[in-house]
Image (cartoon, rainbow, N blue to C red):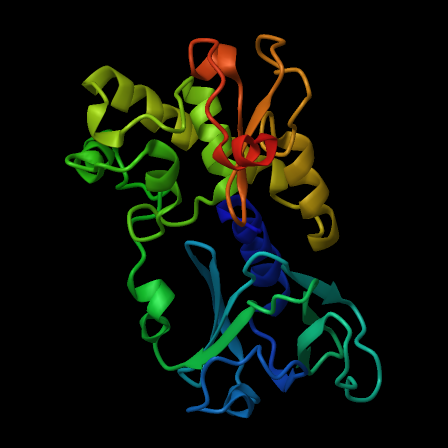
Amino acid sequence: MPELPEVEALRDLLSERLVGREVVRVLPVAVSVLKTYDPPAGAFEGSRITGVHRHGKFLDIAGDSGLHLVTHLARAGWLQWKDRLPDGPPKPGKGPLALRVALETGEGFDLTEAGTQKRLAVYVVRDPHEVEGIARLGPDPLADDFDEQRFAALLTGERRQLKGALRDQSLIAGVGNAYSDEILHAAKMSPFKLASSLTPAETRHLYEALRTTLTEAVERSRGLAAGRLKAEKKSGLRVHGRTGEPCPVCGDIIREVSFSDSSLQYCPTCQTGGKPLADRRLSRLLK
């Protein structure tokens, strides 16, 4: 799933290529992609783009018509920029293409989604906060006003485990499964540690890991073509998605805990005092 760093890189790319250009076509291909119907997607046609913004993991393309074309790429969605779009309208079918946006110049982009779980979402709204997912977002962790005191206040009384708290978009916007693993590894903290149990020193350390991990990921992604962002994300991850590989910090073997539809990765030596965490799904399989 694209998270804050990749969506920020896409925002940069689209800002360079869209601002000042006119949208001539918005062509939904997959029935499931449009989540709003008033105004219709076609109402965005004729808009000249005034800005591209990011809200957590949402991309927000603003037009001079007062409308916003908002998208969330979900788990398997992606954006593909085209210097020249194919002639003729796309054909609906079983392929990955979900929506196409065409500019007056012949350029544009496709939104695609792999797999059978169609969760990619596009909204045409007058205000981005009409999108429920944006309205409930917590603060952006890279915002100038997101300081250590604000972070500490968010965690005060938070009874959830750190992994779940970091992924909660209503608490902190933009961090998902991959970067929460990376942040906790950098902070040398167990994903199962209760957020409310952190000492002031631990809170400071986690805040620094959060900001550093995301900032470095944004810098690695900045300026890359959209097609290279996935590979850059994977290459920059130290523990997430690297089960069975050696930890780049201590050399211990990276372990995994599986859930019904996701998994987390961690280093026992760096994060849990050398003790493997219980993997309940694996335990059930071994019975």
